[in-house]
Image (tube, rainbow over all chains, first blue to last red; front, side, top):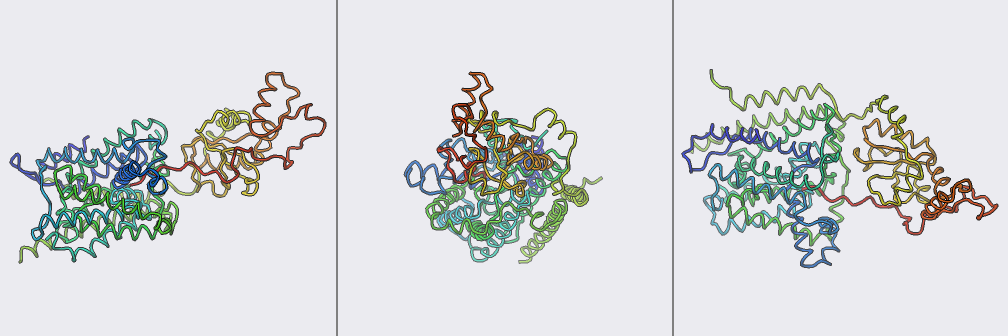
Length: 190
Length: 199
Length: 208
């Protein structure tokens, strides 16, 4: 908890914001250390790291299984996320963790007056196109994360801190892929 | 004390699920504080104008890495009980590439899009739905790509194990590398800011 | 005095910890240390053994809290193994899927091989490791083909039931004069146990 108050304090340092206007974001290094301590807490308490795409996988597998149970059972990808039907979606560790992420993000957003219904995009692209590309990007992310057995949180953060070989190779490739593509999609952002 | 507590039976599944939620809140809070609910800030990483992604990510990795190392040194944490995925080199390399491309096109990763949609961003919501669609496509194609998915298995390998270095040395090397990256990032940001002013 | 920048403090901390790590060495090194006190305490208190009958009762009760490990060669394992046992060669013991917090019961043909492996696992800080006393020979003599003549009526039926449960046959007058030698190939896996390698319970994916 002291970690959280640290960040709250550091927030005040960085902006003498008039109330109700969004505050400046926190110092990235301090926030990074806080994030690292959350990750460490997950390690020492539960013996696992953080994740995000795994929760989506469990949700997708549950939906597929409720629509077409035979189809899901025959597919070893879905069935590995169904755990033999012995537990429900809300007994899944990562699902609860991601729900917590949403709550935590919302709380922080409220405290800093950053909750806003908006679309984040560069100045040169329409909202419709931005949303189209958000969907495409999300789709690539979902597919890539499953192929790599984890996303930025599960592989890069968690595996990175545990010095896992595959996670480091993965992390380098994420940056490589993103930097290689950045020039071609610059109209989206700048 | 024996850590991880859960693996030594200090509490059961229910408590671990409550912890999942609490840890998730901490995770989401930190991500939002870092500005990761905002796709423009995340994407700025790839145009060298704001290197937040690198700074936050490596600060977090180094912090947790130190924690694991020193807990291990004091003999109270058993790292072999912390779950990590096995290494499957080729699928992970290709998956990382695809994921990186998706990152810069969509502007988020799954965790940050959850924060983004929780703070009202429509693009974050659409992105999150996109991730689910991507997983669904992967699931439907899984029988076709299963062979590739399990190829190149190397078991559970760590950097110290693979390069035959001492764990302490790798911790040192990663930390110094991160410090170098931070210094380079600060320098690069200043340079980009000057360039923008000069326009 | 000007307050030092937080970045500078963090950078100094990082360097400090990094240099300690460089010299502090490896908490997970491959050299094993043996704690003689703990080992001898374990042996004197009998916390290191399971008798064949106790194991049989655990198996019948369906107790899933432990992992049963067969240390013999794969061919021997495939001919017969105690129901539920997984086959791990002593060479691969430390690289196997065994977890340090699991209850592990080891057996081999006799006590020697399992005893060596027991010390190895204890040195590697596995928390709860036991050996099946008497090994597979003990299992044959006490569970599959027990001598029951000298026992009371009650005991006799209990032991016989256990023996039948595992597809064995008590040695008694009824079976007659022909002695059942324990290493006859008569021993077969009970019908309800598949002879193929039992798969370890599928781990639920924990990752992202």
